[in-house]
Length: 387
Ligand SMILES: Cc1cc2nc3c(=O)[nH]c(=O)nc-3n(C[C@H](O)[C@H](O)[C@H](O)COP(=O)(O)OP(=O)(O)OC[C@H]3O[C@@H](n4cnc5c(N)ncnc54)[C@H](O)[C@@H]3O)c2cc1C
Image 1 (cartoon, rainbow, N blue to C red):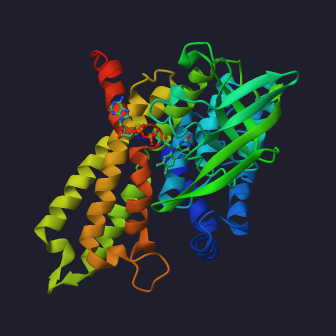
Image 2 (cartoon, rainbow, N blue to C red; image 1 turned 30 degrees about the vertical axis):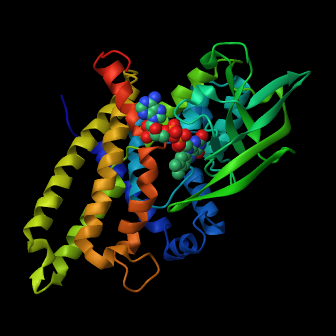
Image 3 (cartoon, rainbow, N blue to C red; image 1 turned 90 degrees about the vertical axis):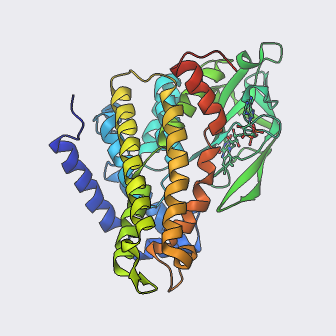
């Protein structure tokens, strides 16, 4: 049993880190403060990542990837997370791999190379006002009419829909079937007449309500097979749960806090010499080690096709709660300075503590509420009866 990266993997990690150091410029960071959705420099950065072969490091060569394993793709994901500069994570890490497994040949050939070039962004359209945790209760309808499907309904929390090229949309195609068995997935171009969005302003970020009024799309927009959507949703969500479990941004926050605490004093005492600070940082560091092991195990298992279905839920619960703890604790250690946002002369670590403490609240719900994930671990991991 080996609990470490190989020499090649370490080297790869360093190579990715130095590439990112070079390409994430001060101008790009400034643009992201002005426009968190990303402007021209950000788009160029994503396309450069694609052109230089990084986006698909673990993807098959036939779709434009480097043909390495999911473990190398995971190393890339951690390094990107560490920078704090977003890429189209959902598209690259969840929709792409789901399409690779379950999409039609035409969809794979069209979407996968575009995803790897950073040319397409896809948002997730599952949740509805009456269908969040109970997602199978969704009411948006897709009705087949000749050579089209016509879609009507409304989704909430369609994050990034205002920037996306497509919605990965769950809609009911058989109203008479049991509720999990009448759902299909579609790739709906956001330029289609009848599609629109309005903003939902949440703590630390924007999401959207998305509307579908007689949205007419071709039959080829159906992903895989009709009424098999539940399988596609659970595949995509498992990948999303693993993607939400990364540790690198937390690790960087702990490093930045240690650096600040070793250089600053409060009431004449170096912050790092206060007992509660040392205890807190030690505890966070131990828990981070647990998360790292859980994640590397998941990436290895994915590589070996041994992912038990409860593992993504388990990792996501642990990561989402540790994430809150890391950013809250680091903000407490930094005192008032930790609450100052990026852009101010008084900010520490580019305002990371307060930004992430807010932004990452979503991890407690996104990809499925943690209460429900605990239930899945109990049932499928421990074999307990359904509650
Ligand atoms: C910032 C943000 C971004 C999001 N982005 C997207 C997106 O891009 N696309 C998308 O489709 N959705 C998105 N979502 C929606 C997200 O997936 C849902 O919020 C989540 O599934 C929970 O659904 P809900 O909000 O309707 O809460 P509810 O389902 O109403 O749950 C409320 C609470 O009740 C608990 N609960 C519900 N049912 C049970 C039960 N049977 N047993 C025990 N406890 C239960 C839940 O655990 C939770 O604590 C986003 C949400 C947020 C906050």
